[in-house]
Every structure is written in structure tokens, then in C-alpha cells.
Length: 353
Image 1 (cartoon, rainbow, N blue to C red):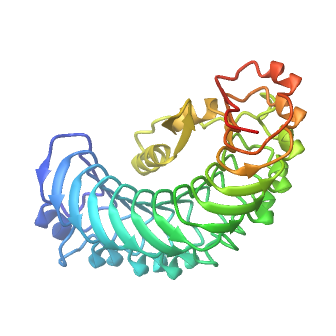
Image 2 (tube, rainbow, N blue to C red):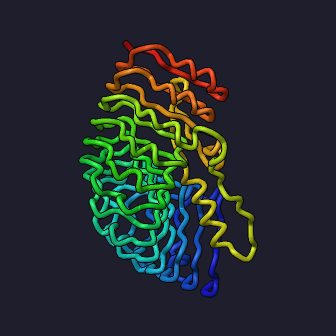
């Protein structure tokens, strides 16, 4: 079928390997979607002829081995979705040479090594998801794609400081770096990311103060800075975020299926699947995904070294569902303004002085 441009066999019960003749003979193929099956083995052999491939969707299978170098022949690749497999080895540096790449979605594998420095060349990158792998090393200082909206690098072994990574990524909506080994302070340039809505920097070795620049992020609705070494007082100005009222609720745009636009259909579906944020409430960690995220709001500053009293302005966060200030060195009374927290579902002020 050398004229075939799109093949979608997702959500079936297929098993075995990707047929050799498919990878060699379907030379016009632009979209290959085989997700959520039971396919296994290596993804492609060296005899790879899908040079026009733009979307490769193989998530939710049992593929093993490395991301094949033969895939570098698909120079127009814009979406790579390989999550929830058993892939190993390093993230290929040649991905950074593929200027059309918009989405690199590789979570829930066994990938290791650093994030390639070549990723700094990806000026069109919109989604980067390497969560739940064995990625190590530091964040490349030059990694700051101008169009990126989603960054999910949680549950890896990243080290070093945030420094200048994502400094120029002003379109960023989600920054999830939780459960790594990063240290240093939260950068003061964080207010440059004006669209930031979900900020997850938990379970690290971050120190210093909670920056007042967070107050400049008007769309902020989910913040997790727990299990760090943050000190000082809680900023009084946090009540200027979107948690204060319903005027800035972030809505996920409704996507209407278009039969004549299969590529957009796959891309939008994958982006919704890739946008998942983990947040702990009532001592249980939940994963919020898709439109559900827009209904969840919370602040978790627990397990730090914060001092002084709880600002009365926190009571103005009338949209907040979860507030956790436990295991700090806070003093003074519970602010009377907390009576205005009409939507609160979980409030934890335990183990404070």
C-alpha cells in the first residue's frame, strides 16, 4: 500500500511485532497509530522507509529496546508518542536535529542518561514529557523552547539547579519537575512565565524563600512546593492568583472531531492524554488529567521550614480545594478569614509550632 497516508489501529488486541513490510513498503505513510495494543519487540529495524512519517503513536504497548536510529530518517516528524512501554537506553541526540518536532512524549519507560543538549535547537517544541524514567544529569541551561506549553519531567534522577532552563519559555502552562534531586532556589524569573497554571516542584532539595514573584502569575491554580527546605514566611500576596475567584478559570478548548483532519485528531488526543498532573490531597496522591485539571485547585507548602504566622490574605483564595501548610514552623492563630474558604475540601495545618 505505497499510497497509504494514514493508518490507525489503536485500541485493539493486536500482538507481535510491527510487520517488516509495513515499515519498508508504506513509503507515503504520514500517520502511524498503533497505541494501546500488545505489540512487542523492537519498534523498527534498520530497513526503514517511512521517510514521510509525521506522527508516530505507539504508546501503551510492550515495545522493548532503544528508540531506533532509523527513525531519524523521518525528518518531518512532528509528534513522537511512545509512553507506557518498556523502552530502554538513552534519549537519542538526533531528536534535537528534527526541527519539526512539536511533541516528544516518552513517559513510563526505562530511558536513562541526560536530556540531550541538542534539544535546545527544538524551537517548535510544545510538549516535553519524560516523566517516570531514569533520566539523570542536569537540565540543559539552554533548554528554553519559546512555544513550549507542557513540561513533565517528574520521577526521574535529575540533579543540579533550575538556573536558566525554561527562562524564555513564556508560553509554559505546566512545569512539573517533582520527585527529582534538584537543589538551589526557585528562580526569581518565574514571573516571566505569565501563563503558568500548574507548578510542581515537590520532593526536592530546594531552599531559600517562596518567591514573591509567584504572585505575578495570575493564572496559577495548582502549586506544590512540598518536601523541600524552603524557609521564611508565606507571601501575603498569593491571593492575587486565579485561586481568588472564578474570573480566570482555565478552560481546556473543546476539540471537535473532523473526519478530514485525522492528523489534528491524533495530535489533540495525545496532548490531552499527556497533560496529567499529580497532586496530593487528603494524604493520597491523585493524577488529574484532561479537563478534570481545570476543576482542581490547591497549594501544598508542607514539610518545609516556613516560619511566622499564616497570612490572613490566604482566606481570599475562595476557589481553593486543597490547602496544606503542615509540618512547618508556623506560629499564631488560624486566620479568621479562613471562614471564606467555601470550596475547601482538605485543610491540613498539623504539626506546626
